[in-house]
Length: 423
Image (cartoon, rainbow, N blue to C red):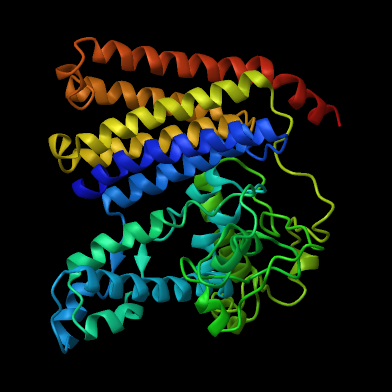
């Protein structure tokens, strides 16, 4: 928990700098594909995922350590060779968990957030799940357990393998010659994120593209077919927490409304997107039928709202950095209170980004919750030991945030609501 938080303290600034550099480079080249609102939503998703992981909000029914104790034939030492073996096995494990997430209705819910951006850039790599609370696929690491790869090696290699998937989420790197035959490249991953019929559900590999070629899921990026990004049932929100549960909500609704008991049970395990017979007509949901002709979400936000959203994301990154750097000092169970505040923060300002009038209510709840923390603890989780004016800084931020929400809802969003009511 604490160790992973320290790793993220190093990774987060690096990711942020690379996202900014991609924005600058794209603007310079006249090929900017890093819309600010989309990027704020992506970064916000990364924040919620990082907080969830650091808090350990997941359950593993069969741990890797247990498997090593029970089935290991050998016991390898932690050396370079062992790390290489672990890396290859984890990549194989990653391919299959990724493929299953694309092909089974229930497991798509945890992965849809990653594909929800209608852009393809470094920021969208940060769109990671908070809806996966149970790890069911540890058994795919059985090959590593049999040969006795130490648990510490797996624990260290897993985040390294994850971070190495960041760089290829970009349009600016074209095909890479002979590396296209070995590694997952930006070209391969553009195919994976595309919703074109030629590309959908292809290229599930994470580091080595060989798995797709072995298991017949490989598709080369075609010059004549320009990739179109997103999901076929578009999220239509900037709120990453809501995106995380959209597909699950539809599954629950369809299972509840189905009169066929077999459908109520099998819907969870059917191919992704499957619905009971006639449900598309009886209970229609917004779905992209022509990938070359649809309106991207949220492209008309005011500059004021865009800049305020950026400020909120930056402040939240500062709050999260303080959290990750002081987990031991904050301690259990208080870290969960801090984590809840971060989730409330992201939910509140991304609702405002959606121009929802309810965002002011969420902001009011967050404001009161923040004041309650200061009143109960007398301090913002030890911040006063670093800044004597820490409490005043937090109160000032909470007041400004609430005031800005009231301003946008009362003045900026009012004409749009009036138009809706008049219609």
